[in-house]
Image 1 (tube, rainbow, N blue to C red):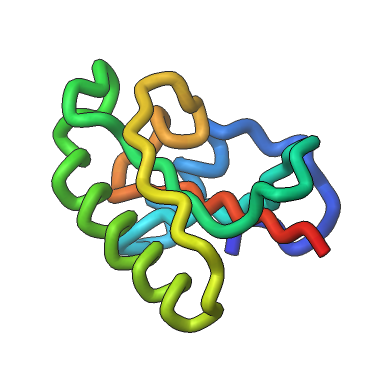
Image 2: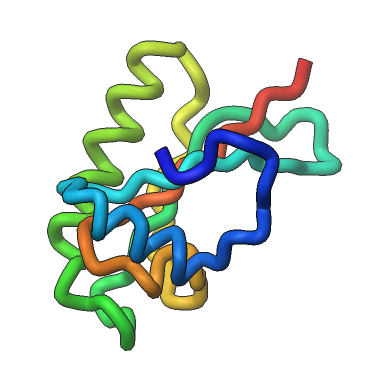
Length: 109
């Protein structure tokens, strides 16, 4: 776990370095998503795109991680599956040196 307090003064690069330096095999970032549309809910995950200019070499393992994690979370919680999105523009992904995914969960009550 990278952060155990409300200290948010950790850059995305530092988070990726901490994950890799810890000896972890994967880097999973968990975020609370938001929407002004109250009908939007569920879980989506983000992973590097196949043509990501920074970490394309992590694509296959990151995509497998993302697919498996989303499937398991949806199965365990009954949340709506909002899919896997492949991205090139997320600094929270692009500094990674190990397979990476970002989980975005959104629940409107």
